[in-house]
Length: 319
Image (spheres, rainbow, N blue to C red):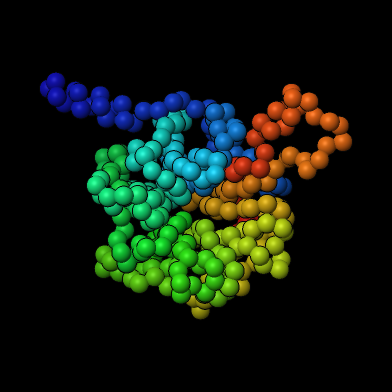
């Protein structure tokens, strides 16, 4: 009996581990303009990127990234009894981990990491890894294997209802400088990845693709297109009746800025669209000379050019 009680206490400790947070999901998401996702104040001056939320909207993972991209860690928020609790993800905190995304079943999570393949090997290039939730606990991640992972970097996984995997990679046989790739999941195995349609991939950069669970919508970032707004912009393509991706369209100035806009995600209930942006409220020059106090105030504001999360009603993207 004592062992049973101890196990229950340990499980309770895992569930409620972390720091209480004042984070809240809005009841209504703006259609007029994107709004800053308000994370705990501890992160106000740090670079935050990518976001995923479970199908039940009760569990969130996002990445906190250092300056100069030295290290990144996936953070975890779980909702219990109406309150969100925050901690480092149970599988993160040792290596450069980022870009977590839920599978539609809510019990599998895919992410990118440069962690070694085993405890005795060296840090390697970025691969895609998978962790599964068993009895409410996320298990030790497993590498997806050499059909998906190569000596090059693989990033930003997205999973469909059928298990099809989309990801970003820069291979020698890519259409462009960086492509979005697709691998089907057939009889428990991934097929050889293919660079997806020319309607999406070009001779430029295409990366960080969100794909809807039913495999009908893809949103991604591309750099250097003739219709971009000055940075790398978010684009959308929808699958036509013949199964071919339509020509990608820029999401426009309501979403995109003149800075890097990336890491798109739509909640499973299609209520909100989240993305990362390096947009800033800093000015390139000031009419009035800054003193030390005003300079620090400017530099310490949330929108200071580092990565921040933004969201908007998903209807504004999917319409």
